[in-house]
Length: 484
Image (cartoon, rainbow, N blue to C red; front, side):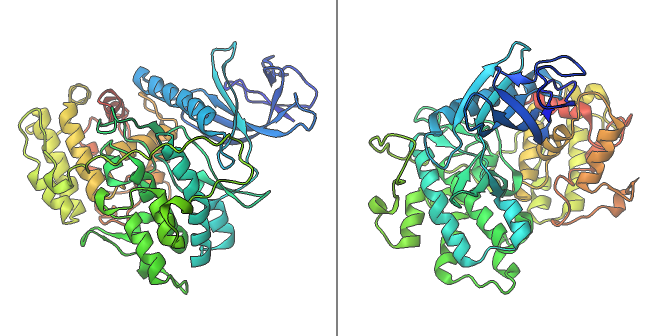
């Protein structure tokens, strides 16, 4: 079976066809790559398992098609930039045997972007967790010993991955090695830009605090790997492994007949420290504590690397850590005071904080008398205030709540600037605003940290002119404009 790569068609065709029977598009990319199975899709494209017919063995490969279903020039341009960046990073880093190799990157004659890379046969760690159960101490140590040299390699090349999570580490069937995938979110860090605030990218459950503020660095990847490990040990969402009232990790409370000795526990605790300077600064430091070897000998060069050995590049030093939430400058373009919102969030009073968010948004828009926000009010809402509100929610929920988290889910479901009932209902189901096919009343929401991801803010959205239910397409577009 051959799948049509035309995103407006995607029909299946019998083997041997060179053109799609439905739309007459070419079925082979560059006359050599044939898509045979859809293995992933989102708001910005699709991923296919494919066959490379140019080689006698006809090996499998992966075709990534960039074709955004979301609207908005800024959003599409940013996504296109990240897609091209992934190709650049794979070309640079794919020489390592535990990183997929880039085969091709091209703009085809249909004006769509394609990336062709090595296919890794195996399960990712999320799939392995579901099929085999929680990891024990030995498996976690083996994973760290296996993947840390890969992180050391990419960091030595000045690259921060920015999206370390179970889904992006695949256990290769052939040799059981851990392979690091998906470099679309990675960022090149240089001495010139390491202190510059960048785009906040990554999966909220695993993102380090400084990365949530747009300042990812090498220790940010080590934090995400540490959070990945405690998730694999417990199979509990990282959001629930952190006690917001005491501001501390409580992952040991969720270990069920799965003992972790103090030496490994201390290593994991140091990997997930909130303060960047309290955390490990390099993968080599972690390996030193794991193995007891010196930093110079703890990283072993693979026996049969795909790359030629080159002199080691010094790992980029960590920039000073960003200000903690207690010292965040609560900026407002219209002089609104956010200290009460900060206090409520810091105390974990989610309902009161949600209602306060609505109040301050009305103040910013100068619509306190009307008690609602019109579409023009959202279009003109100051970016400075949106960022302040979003940063406060992100920080005090450890990345679980906030407008940017809601926007990410909304776009992943195909949401655009136009209202779509199906997308809206799917969004409501995903974030816990609907149950049994019905929208919940405000009093029926879950006002604690165990609420579904992106459950809040809610009250402020109910103030927007409601020609729809769910997340506001107008607000989504304003978040894009404000680069939030």
